[in-house]
Image (cartoon, rainbow, N blue to C red; front, side, top):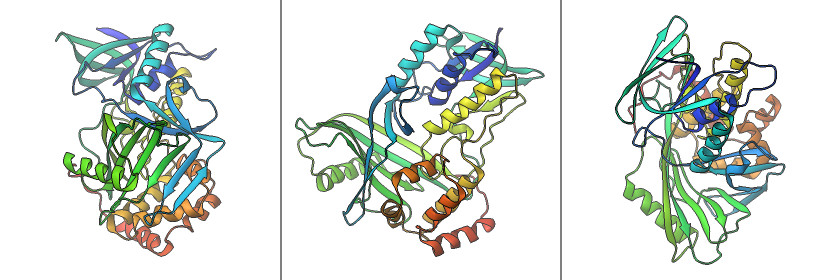
Length: 397
């Protein structure tokens, strides 16, 4: 049986981020032996994806950033554009392949993290640590004893919640052959799409060059669409709304992100913890996860280096989660019109303040001011309903 101080299961954003932080010990702190368990190529390995987040100035992963922007634009359902400059923030886009290559290079250079390709079959708690039983890519059984285990694999089912919506999307990487995109500006939320009866839909355009972009159709609703429905929505959006013609689709991206007020168990044993989306790192009201993962894994790494119990924190405050729960219920119940709700926010509140709010960087008085720009009476009705709503298992997408 192999031994390690720390075992990390899964090499998605959360697993790689924690491994990267532990590979660079700060002076005067403990050096830890770390094993990163990555599933062999196949259905258990995270699919390729794109992550977006915002931060001020340069960041630790800039070498992997595909593109960044300081101008974000929304469109009201009636077509009026609302544009914001978010300086000193930058909105950044990273492809998961580039992120993984950057982390793999640093891990190999540091030599402190051992990467093992194996499928984890069980995790068993022990008096001081846990035993992981796994199977290597060639079918051989293997086992590992670790003092601390951090599991970043997706949950098999979501915890019970009062409200769960799905943020589901499908995107095309397009090449037009001629300059049609303003590569200095993101179409952040284009509400000129047909709106569902409950929830929200919008277009999203990330230009990576004058003739290239990722164009996505996104919905917040209870269930996903058929593959053909996404393609039809994208055909309508690129043609009727964006006016794109004669373009080539060079790749696709599909995803489903739960937006839920469920309570995520970040600890499943004395020495076993969940991190990432499975550990509550996703912001319930938006589906953004990457920045929450960074805050969560940074706190875990600090605790480990200083010999403290490394319980992963929830990266979003209790107040933020309570506000998100009210918004999710208001959208799901139809108490507010999603397109009108977000149009009001983009029209009346500076985008930099909204982004700081979504990252938990606003004070109570700022949050109250944001709340007053929403449909106040419907939101108060949604808040009044919350204590009476039962938590139920999510039936699945």
